[in-house]
Length: 203
Image 1: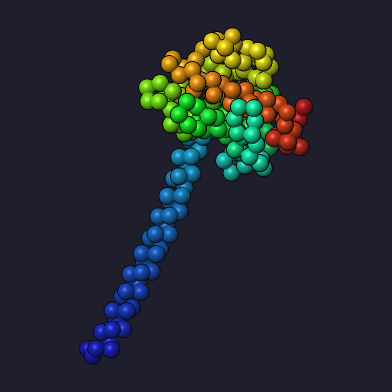
Image 2: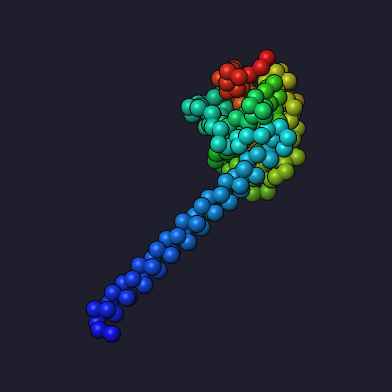
Protein backbone atom coordinates (compact mmCIF):
# COMPACT_ATOMS: atom_id res chain seq x y z
CA UNK A 1 0.00 0.00 0.00
CA UNK A 2 1.50 3.31 -1.03
CA UNK A 3 1.64 6.41 1.14
CA UNK A 4 -1.24 8.20 -0.62
CA UNK A 5 -3.56 5.26 -0.05
CA UNK A 6 -2.63 5.15 3.62
CA UNK A 7 -3.38 8.85 4.03
CA UNK A 8 -6.74 8.46 2.32
CA UNK A 9 -7.69 5.51 4.52
CA UNK A 10 -6.65 7.36 7.69
CA UNK A 11 -8.63 10.41 6.59
CA UNK A 12 -11.71 8.27 5.89
CA UNK A 13 -11.47 6.54 9.25
CA UNK A 14 -11.05 9.90 11.00
CA UNK A 15 -14.09 11.24 9.18
CA UNK A 16 -16.15 8.21 10.15
CA UNK A 17 -15.01 8.62 13.76
CA UNK A 18 -15.97 12.30 13.82
CA UNK A 19 -19.33 11.51 12.23
CA UNK A 20 -20.06 8.72 14.70
CA UNK A 21 -19.07 10.95 17.62
CA UNK A 22 -21.36 13.72 16.33
CA UNK A 23 -24.31 11.32 16.03
CA UNK A 24 -23.74 9.98 19.54
CA UNK A 25 -23.48 13.51 20.94
CA UNK A 26 -26.67 14.59 19.16
CA UNK A 27 -28.53 11.58 20.51
CA UNK A 28 -27.16 12.16 24.00
CA UNK A 29 -28.01 15.87 23.86
CA UNK A 30 -31.65 15.15 23.04
CA UNK A 31 -31.86 12.56 25.81
CA UNK A 32 -30.23 14.96 28.29
CA UNK A 33 -32.60 17.77 27.24
CA UNK A 34 -35.60 15.46 27.69
CA UNK A 35 -34.34 14.33 31.09
CA UNK A 36 -33.85 17.96 32.14
CA UNK A 37 -37.39 18.74 30.98
CA UNK A 38 -38.76 15.87 33.07
CA UNK A 39 -36.73 17.00 36.09
CA UNK A 40 -37.97 20.57 35.71
CA UNK A 41 -41.53 19.32 35.38
CA UNK A 42 -41.29 17.31 38.58
CA UNK A 43 -39.58 20.17 40.40
CA UNK A 44 -42.08 22.82 39.30
CA UNK A 45 -45.32 20.91 38.95
CA UNK A 46 -45.45 19.05 42.24
CA UNK A 47 -47.35 22.09 43.54
CA UNK A 48 -50.32 21.12 41.36
CA UNK A 49 -52.70 18.21 42.00
CA UNK A 50 -51.85 15.55 39.42
CA UNK A 51 -55.38 15.44 37.96
CA UNK A 52 -55.76 19.23 37.77
CA UNK A 53 -54.06 19.67 34.37
CA UNK A 54 -53.48 17.77 31.15
CA UNK A 55 -51.21 20.17 29.27
CA UNK A 56 -47.48 20.80 29.71
CA UNK A 57 -47.63 23.99 31.83
CA UNK A 58 -43.91 24.75 31.51
CA UNK A 59 -44.41 24.98 27.74
CA UNK A 60 -47.34 27.38 28.18
CA UNK A 61 -45.53 30.48 29.39
CA UNK A 62 -47.55 33.58 30.19
CA UNK A 63 -46.58 36.77 28.32
CA UNK A 64 -45.73 38.71 31.47
CA UNK A 65 -43.22 41.51 31.76
CA UNK A 66 -41.01 41.61 34.84
CA UNK A 67 -43.02 43.69 37.32
CA UNK A 68 -42.09 45.21 40.65
CA UNK A 69 -44.90 44.55 43.10
CA UNK A 70 -45.29 45.81 46.67
CA UNK A 71 -42.60 43.69 48.32
CA UNK A 72 -41.45 41.40 45.53
CA UNK A 73 -40.71 41.15 41.82
CA UNK A 74 -42.80 39.09 39.43
CA UNK A 75 -40.52 37.31 36.97
CA UNK A 76 -42.87 35.29 34.81
CA UNK A 77 -45.42 32.55 34.90
CA UNK A 78 -46.99 29.46 33.39
CA UNK A 79 -50.57 28.38 32.73
CA UNK A 80 -51.97 24.95 33.55
CA UNK A 81 -55.07 23.83 31.69
CA UNK A 82 -57.43 20.88 31.70
CA UNK A 83 -59.58 20.04 28.67
CA UNK A 84 -58.54 23.37 27.17
CA UNK A 85 -59.70 25.43 30.15
CA UNK A 86 -57.42 27.21 32.65
CA UNK A 87 -56.99 25.35 35.93
CA UNK A 88 -54.08 27.14 37.63
CA UNK A 89 -51.40 29.76 37.23
CA UNK A 90 -47.79 29.34 38.36
CA UNK A 91 -46.06 32.64 39.11
CA UNK A 92 -42.33 33.03 39.58
CA UNK A 93 -41.58 35.63 42.22
CA UNK A 94 -38.46 37.02 43.84
CA UNK A 95 -38.31 38.51 47.33
CA UNK A 96 -35.41 39.96 49.30
CA UNK A 97 -34.70 37.98 52.45
CA UNK A 98 -32.18 38.38 55.27
CA UNK A 99 -29.12 37.42 53.23
CA UNK A 100 -30.21 37.81 49.62
CA UNK A 101 -32.90 37.08 47.09
CA UNK A 102 -35.41 34.26 47.47
CA UNK A 103 -36.93 32.81 44.31
CA UNK A 104 -40.40 31.35 44.74
CA UNK A 105 -42.90 29.45 42.64
CA UNK A 106 -46.47 30.28 43.65
CA UNK A 107 -49.44 28.24 42.38
CA UNK A 108 -52.91 29.82 42.33
CA UNK A 109 -56.15 28.22 41.16
CA UNK A 110 -58.66 29.96 38.89
CA UNK A 111 -60.65 31.17 41.90
CA UNK A 112 -57.66 32.99 43.34
CA UNK A 113 -56.90 30.46 46.09
CA UNK A 114 -53.33 29.47 46.82
CA UNK A 115 -52.49 25.89 45.82
CA UNK A 116 -48.94 25.93 47.10
CA UNK A 117 -45.59 27.67 47.34
CA UNK A 118 -42.11 26.32 46.68
CA UNK A 119 -38.67 27.87 47.13
CA UNK A 120 -36.63 27.52 43.95
CA UNK A 121 -33.48 29.28 45.15
CA UNK A 122 -32.31 31.03 48.32
CA UNK A 123 -29.16 32.04 50.18
CA UNK A 124 -30.52 32.47 53.70
CA UNK A 125 -28.78 31.49 56.93
CA UNK A 126 -28.26 27.69 57.19
CA UNK A 127 -30.42 26.16 59.92
CA UNK A 128 -32.62 29.27 60.14
CA UNK A 129 -34.00 31.06 57.08
CA UNK A 130 -32.58 28.42 54.73
CA UNK A 131 -35.24 26.05 56.04
CA UNK A 132 -37.60 27.89 53.71
CA UNK A 133 -36.14 25.67 50.95
CA UNK A 134 -37.05 22.37 52.65
CA UNK A 135 -39.46 20.30 50.58
CA UNK A 136 -42.06 19.41 51.56
CA UNK A 137 -42.25 22.51 53.73
CA UNK A 138 -44.64 22.53 56.69
CA UNK A 139 -44.45 26.30 57.16
CA UNK A 140 -45.38 27.08 53.56
CA UNK A 141 -48.44 24.83 53.79
CA UNK A 142 -50.09 27.25 56.25
CA UNK A 143 -50.85 29.51 53.28
CA UNK A 144 -52.59 26.86 51.16
CA UNK A 145 -56.22 27.77 50.52
CA UNK A 146 -55.70 31.43 51.35
CA UNK A 147 -56.55 34.22 48.90
CA UNK A 148 -55.97 37.94 48.54
CA UNK A 149 -58.79 38.77 50.97
CA UNK A 150 -58.62 35.69 53.17
CA UNK A 151 -57.44 36.87 55.58
CA UNK A 152 -57.88 40.61 55.12
CA UNK A 153 -54.91 42.92 54.57
CA UNK A 154 -54.28 43.56 58.26
CA UNK A 155 -54.14 39.85 59.04
CA UNK A 156 -51.83 39.08 56.09
CA UNK A 157 -48.82 39.46 58.36
CA UNK A 158 -46.76 37.58 60.92
CA UNK A 159 -48.17 37.30 64.42
CA UNK A 160 -45.37 39.50 65.72
CA UNK A 161 -46.63 42.14 63.25
CA UNK A 162 -50.19 41.73 64.59
CA UNK A 163 -51.10 39.37 61.78
CA UNK A 164 -52.39 35.81 61.53
CA UNK A 165 -49.36 33.75 60.56
CA UNK A 166 -46.57 32.07 62.50
CA UNK A 167 -43.01 32.50 61.27
CA UNK A 168 -40.11 30.16 60.66
CA UNK A 169 -38.39 30.02 64.06
CA UNK A 170 -35.42 32.38 64.21
CA UNK A 171 -36.07 33.74 60.71
CA UNK A 172 -38.38 36.73 61.01
CA UNK A 173 -37.03 38.65 58.01
CA UNK A 174 -37.09 35.59 55.75
CA UNK A 175 -40.61 34.70 56.86
CA UNK A 176 -41.88 38.24 56.37
CA UNK A 177 -40.34 38.47 52.89
CA UNK A 178 -41.92 35.20 51.72
CA UNK A 179 -45.31 36.01 53.26
CA UNK A 180 -45.38 39.41 51.56
CA UNK A 181 -44.36 37.88 48.22
CA UNK A 182 -47.21 35.36 48.46
CA UNK A 183 -49.70 38.13 49.21
CA UNK A 184 -48.29 40.21 46.34
CA UNK A 185 -48.80 37.28 43.95
CA UNK A 186 -52.37 36.72 45.10
CA UNK A 187 -53.10 40.42 44.69
CA UNK A 188 -51.51 40.44 41.23
CA UNK A 189 -53.62 37.44 40.21
CA UNK A 190 -56.78 39.12 41.44
CA UNK A 191 -56.02 42.33 39.55
CA UNK A 192 -54.92 40.60 36.32
CA UNK A 193 -57.14 37.52 36.38
CA UNK A 194 -58.53 37.86 32.87
CA UNK A 195 -55.11 38.53 31.37
CA UNK A 196 -53.58 35.53 33.14
CA UNK A 197 -56.36 33.05 32.41
CA UNK A 198 -57.15 34.21 28.89
CA UNK A 199 -60.31 34.67 26.89
CA UNK A 200 -61.47 31.05 27.31
CA UNK A 201 -62.24 31.50 30.98
CA UNK A 202 -65.76 30.35 31.86
CA UNK A 203 -67.30 32.38 34.65
